[in-house]
Image 1 (cartoon, rainbow, N blue to C red):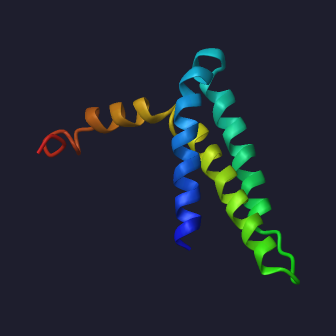
Image 2 (spheres, rainbow, N blue to C red; image 1 turned 45 degrees about the vertical axis):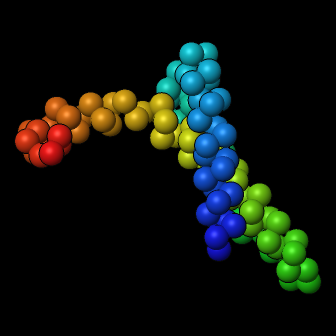
Length: 99
């Protein structure tokens, strides 16, 4: 289980460097759409099982989660500035945000 979480974190961290270049070349909507497709492919790969070989099943799980982490970076990073701006401008969080 720990290796699965590390795999997602590593792929997310690697994709952070690529997302800044991709946002200059593509629209944010395009990146979110591609990220959703990549996340879907990663989840489908994670679900593949080979009943005879446990190591092959673990391989598909780790690879699927790495693909999922890369897709998650494409979805969340381009919209992060808007999310932070919405939190800062919200009257609900205005007084407690900096405390």
